[in-house]
Image (cartoon, rainbow, N blue to C red; front, side, top):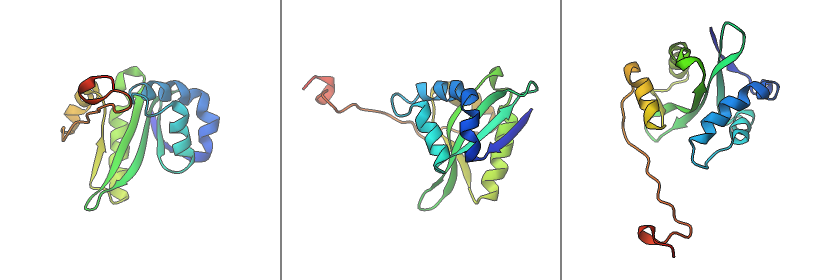
Length: 147
């Protein structure tokens, strides 16, 4: 297995292999992203694409990251993660990301995701800091009543 940072100019060539992974990742954004939005962020230099390639030379995992500069702390944000083979590629991916984050002045790697994501990374030292809640506003009125 090999983990690699993909240059943005290769994303279009890899798109047929990336689309299924990006599609699964986008499903869990609740309408915030479509696969093309993820692709465009990488091509536009707003995000970084990491891939795990299996022994059969197929992409078995993808991670999309970006740098996030808070007023007092720089983090590497894992924006999207998707893959096959039961996350068998997770440990080599995290190892690569930790080194890259350190080399780029980050103090931590952060991410948000569904509850299963937290369980998958619990043994890697991740800890839950907060959760994200959403309250729809358009046409719903207060307290969930239609307005």
